[in-house]
Length: 331
Image (cartoon, rainbow, N blue to C red; front, side):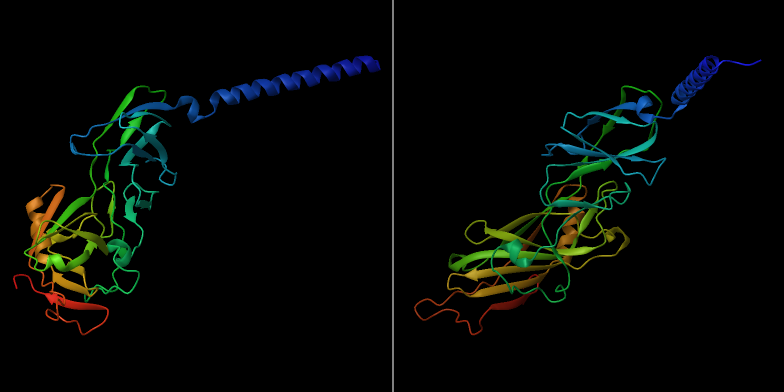
């Protein structure tokens, strides 16, 4: 049977419409079966409980969510006020790590793994930390190659246990319990003579932890020196207070770092002195006494600050630049 050209054109058009309709149906069916996790995401309610750090001063928190089913995935970041908030995540197993985000000096590295997320500060110098001199300040013997770092800000953080989110779950709650990820060290130097003849002081302490892991709270095994300012605390006393990441991560295993304290003094006559003191035992005793407390303190007695030249009497310096004195505890 022969068909007219018009009939053939109609048949072709109908066939085309049928094929198009099949494609549309197939596309819809595929869309229904797709695994678009955003369409089936779980909503998580995040809050912070400060019972382990009641004296905190944090103003805001960052939470990094790590996908435990896809370790190569980048962590999902949310920033919250202290009131917390919500997070939208794919179904699966997750772990959260949090830290306060109101810091200035602290940096973070190794962020792709919740166990290696590490807080640290940039390298600095004795001059920057003490603000006493532009260059050329000496170091205690044996500490010259140790890096000098900036003082860390107050830092709080923690990690959650691994938790599972189901498909289309809502109002699932996650409570995080931040703890201090730093310590405060106070150094008191008492019975210092001739303070009335001094201009300014600074200090440095070696063998401190160079960083701290947020999830575990452990200080790193890398060591650094921190430099700091020192101020008068009465007629014959000096005091310095600084934040540190920690000191000896393996102290419980009997492995201790050496801690050298250096005090820098500029007298009223312009002479410059630095005093090196081995305070290893004092730091470890202070840590033992503090236990889980945030605050550590050591006391050093005596610092032989010379009396400058007054009416032709007093100590007359014979060396330009910084003049060093090694001091033994109890001398």
